[in-house]
Image 1 (cartoon, rainbow, N blue to C red):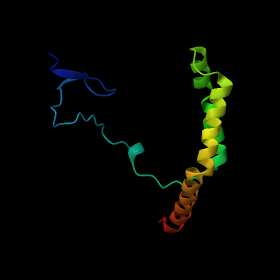
Image 2: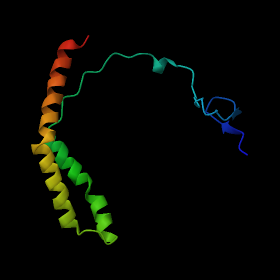
Image 3: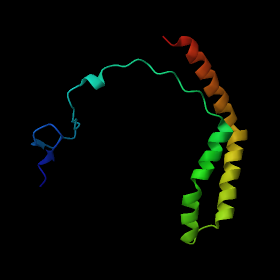
Length: 114
């Protein structure tokens, strides 16, 4: 029966810790260093263009579609075109609504930053 877990962290002695019970969580903490001190807030990044984001998303699917085709799945062209249509439907439907809301939130957050 497993009774504990062997924990080894750089800069700390190795210790055998009992496993947490169902009501506990295993928490591994490290002392705060000067690099963990609060930093100045970075400026917000702008909301990316939805069409560009979807193009990159569909392009990122290519290796998975090729692998699927090599395992006897749907031919690449057919599967790629299907996902492109899905992206286009999303862009012209709910994606457009979400994008407008996101842009609105971004603009409002610019005026409420401290």
